[in-house]
Structures are given as C-alpha cells and as structure tokens.
Image 1 (cartoon, rainbow, N blue to C red):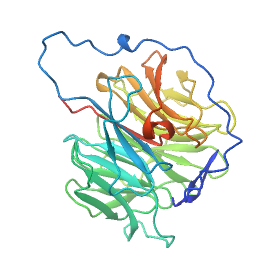
Image 2: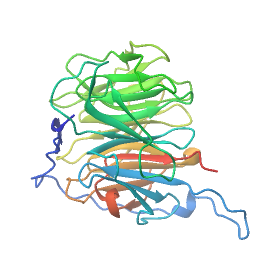
Image 3: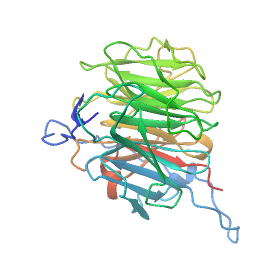
Image 4: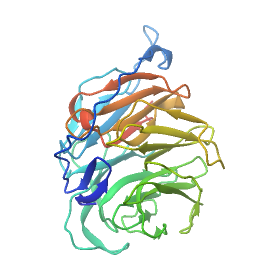
Amino acid sequence: MNLRRLSIPCISLTGIALTSLTACASHAASTLGSLDAVLPSVPAGAPAKRQLLLYAGGPNQNVVGVYPARSYNPPPQLEIRSGLNVPTGIAVDASGNVYVCNNAGTDAPVEPMGKGTWTVSVYHRGQTTPFESYTTGVWNPVDVAVASDGTVYIANYSSAVTVYPAGSLQPSMSLAGPSGESPLGVALDGSRNVYVSYVNPSRGGSIYKYAPGQSSGSDLGIAFSGSPHGLAIDRGGNLLVAVSTAPSPGSSIEVFPPGKTHPKKTITGVFQPFMLAFGRGGRQLFAADFGSGNGDGGVFRFAYPAGTLLGKDTQGPASSAYGIALDVTSK
C-alpha cells in the first residue's frame, strides 16, 4: 500500500500519511497481571540458552527493534535500519531468518506476478543487513508469513497474496480474494492451511481459508463491525483476529473456534491493533498496536487464553508498532 493511499480507520497507511491523527483517543487503562505467571523461571546455574527474541517495528520510525522477549518493556538490544523503507509486517522462519515488508515504492501498478520497486527484505538472525529480498510479485506488502516447509506468503494490499516456494524468490501463484476487498493479514495453522484477512474500504471485511497449494479459498462467513487486521492461530486451532474500530473505541482481539462465526472470547484494551504473535508454548499473546500514530501505541502482552493484560512495551519502535514477530525457534 503506498501507505498514503491505504485508508484504514484512524491511519492512512499509504505514503505513509500517518499524521494529523488528533481524532484518535488514548488507550484505556487496564489492570496488569504478572509476567511471572506465564514466563518460566530459569534455575540458577542452568546452561545458557539462546535468547527468545521479539521483533517490532512500524512505518513511523522506519526501524525494526530487536528485543529480549522475556523482559518487560526493555529497550531494543539491536535495531534494523538497512534495507527498510516504511516497514509493516514481520515474520520469522524455522531457521530464525527475519522477513520485513517494506511498504514504500513507486505508484505504478504491478500485476500479481510482476515486478515493482517494493520489497520484502530478509535478514539472518542477529544481522542488520538483508541477505536477500523479494521483489517479483510484491506491491504494497503489508504482511508476510512463512510455512513450516519454507513456503512464503506475502499479503500485498493493492494486489493479492503471492506465494513463493521454499528457496525461490519467484512467485508460483497468487491467492484469489473477494472482489472490492484488500488483503491485510496472513497466518498459517499447523496443517499449513492459509488464513487471510481482507478489509473493505468502507469498514468491515472477511476472512478466507485456503488449503495448502490451492489458489482459491472459502469465506469463513465471519462478520466484522470493524476492520479485521492481523491474524494468529493458537495451539487448539482457534483463529485470533485483531479487529480495529479506531478512531472510535471498541477495538479488540476476537477468538473464534474452528468452524464458528461468533467469537468465544473477546480480548479488550487495545486501540488500533495490527499484527499478532504468540510466544513459545502459546501462553503469551503479543499484539502490535499502532495507537494514533503519534508514539502512543505499543506492543501489548496478554496471558493466553485468559486475556489478562500483562504489560505494554513502548521503548523504541515498539511505541508505534505495526508489525511484530517472535523467534520461537531459538533454543
């Protein structure tokens, strides 16, 4: 989306015209739970383990911060700046490689399999310079997901979700979506089924499910009063959807059991949530909340499935996070 042209409630994500957002209200205060309840303790003298990492960033600061995920509201221990141009969605694959969508590019339309000037940059764990980039089939990328077999899915707001076989920078197909709606979030379940959120310019949207290797999907039939943004699938196969009503109050994270069109749980406390991610074990849910775009957002941490707010990370680019991912592969 050249973030100037994508009109998502409260922010115009294309250009990125994320200014003049005085209509956005501040977040409501919530009671905090305890991080100790969901983060396992480390016995004294235990062998050192590779650090669990949290990646968070957004278009306002043009930076992706790398944070120790087990600490509450830490400063970034590393910042990725090279290869970024209005970062949005983030993903981490099974090898710990980090994928970042860059939402700025030329205005010329690009066919689903064509090549433009937008990119999705890929970094080795611990590195701040990309070692490769996706360009073919990339146009206004807003989210990215990587399957367990290495297949890459890139959601292009102005086009479609393009699919890349493992190890290839060339797309093999694109996913057909509903007419008049644009893809925004993409997630995969344990069987490699693909879920895509589509937003309607006026408000609302839909969720489609695609079987592995299929370009046509089925509408799950879920109706939204707000805009469905980021998606996540929990260990029980429940679908989580970040639903934004910003600048009006009422945004939430809704949890849908498999095959159901009404949520069994609604998690509140967010203002303008975009992407979602689970920590290792699925006991902690992270939500990137862009806020009003003026640095009043953050990365919300919830105990899951309880939905209790544990804390909010606000240092560095986390303060206006759009994309988020955890490296749960580190040992």
